[in-house]
Image (tube, rainbow over all chains, first blue to last red):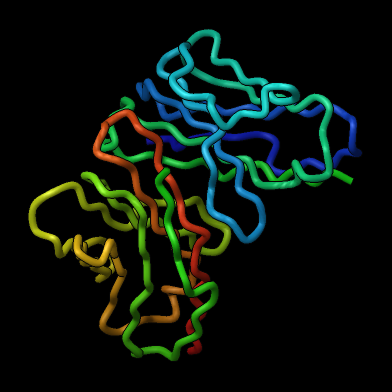
Length: 115
Length: 114
């Protein structure tokens, strides 16, 4: 079974530039999550999708971050414009459904450095 | 609001030593508890989870964790560590509602001396 795919693996940009990350979840997984993991901290949920609808985006900085999952499969997360404090690893995860009984499977992450 | 505390940021042990990593959470109601592990260069993966029933949960690779409700704790244990256990370990919690988000602790880096 293929895992959660993410690209790119690394990205370096200057502040005020834009960046986009892509995630392809495990086939058949209806729920998709984007997390931000700052160095020395645990992952923090940014947004959760159920199919192509948003379940929770309460911690997404909506003035600069946006995410979509138009066809209910793969997803993109965008930052525009980036700030220095956005330097982090962005993790994508998927699960069969939103129930906490279902394990979340994580991708390798995209390491973003903002200069 | 829910929160998770992992008090040990970096633990260094020799092979065959016993391991206990602390995890405390703050939430008064029913909780689901998790330990995730990230081996060097690998993805974050589930080590074990507790939803209900026996408070002593066994996971992969000989790990276990005990849920002590009165102490709001879910400590991870292994009787004899191996060099291959070198990794970062994250405790996580969510409230009883099935759709609520998982809150992660800040992680504990475990280094095993061969």
